[in-house]
Length: 286
Image (tube, rainbow, N blue to C red; front, side, top):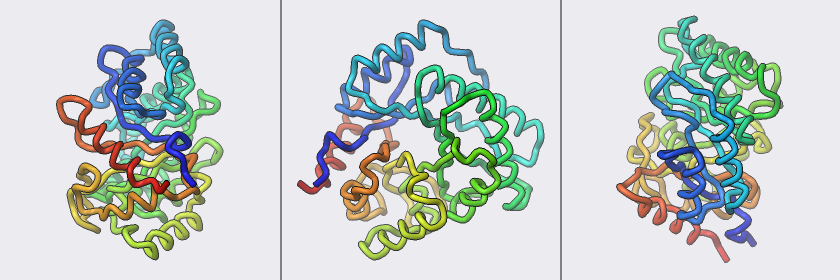
């Protein structure tokens, strides 16, 4: 039996007004886990966190029910770029984000593997690995979680084999793991909507990547159909992924310890997040 309180479930929340405000928003959603950005996801400029910011955040979390905080890396970064300057810029920002995570006692930084652009796939995978490895040098314990992609355009990491290719090139494998996005997987052609297909997929995942290396899930429905290779998130139960797929995940005891975060469309307030989280909780079998 899976108890609601035993699951790490939450949403990506805003830090408007200060990082500590994210803890408050998570509390309003009755979450025990949240995902945040440590700075604007659309800016290269990263101002180091002050001692007061760090203190306010860690104290707010200590006084809350939020057991897990995950940080998502900036969307601007492209660790797989064939352009040296672009990779260097990414490496610098990624290093700063890792250092921020460590100062906030955040264990995981989720990273999109990027786009190979004009390079071939194998070169893109190698560049991504090198960028990650270099960025890890100034921190001790924060793990970079490589997120699977929908395979849109020249994006790498849409297949388990490509994710394995990135992992294989990284020297310090203790410092990397994976984040699984349901929308991205579905758009990339992985169908987990029937018991057989679900079981088959996770057997393959375990064989290639290892379920023990999975630490975070992004639970999102998909606007676009299976194998569309288009990354468009939808509210749970309102997209193309059958609700059974989400039920399988919410009742899979192998993933009790895996932090589950919704990145569903945002409305003006928190009502949409509340509805999506309540629907996921309702799928848990008593």
